[in-house]
Length: 172
Image (cartoon, rainbow, N blue to C red; front, side, top):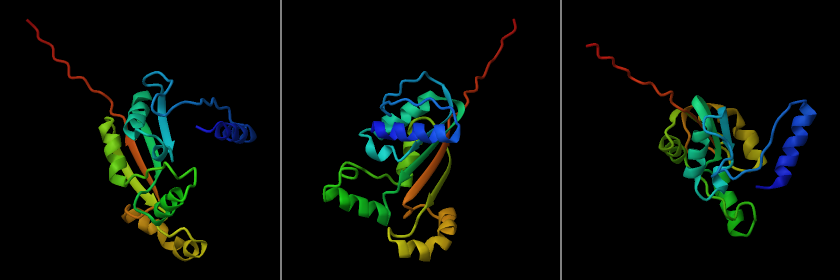
């Protein structure tokens, strides 16, 4: 929603020599044709939209059959989410209206949009303090392979099914 984000992205792409077309749009009403993209991503988007189910449905709509959607969100059941909610309650403008989702809610959003969930992962199981990160970082990857609850960052990857048609011929 912030045009400065697009400008920062534009500078990064230019510096990397990558040609990219950027568009400012509402995630709940995307200005693209059906089945336009092979891959779509939504990273820390859903926690800031009023209707996350509508945003995921829009992302599913613009995916080609067989296309992948990668969702990266701030996990509801983590100390990081608690810290951000607290900051929002105290008036921080970024976190005031944020609503965090659980891994099961993210999977439900994807399946509700007609996508097949391929994987769910989590990371950052330590509290939002530098010393804790240093202490627990070595076990973070192991935890992310085995559990998702408590992860501060959740990833769900889902695939848009390829429609298969059953044809039957009748010969007279």
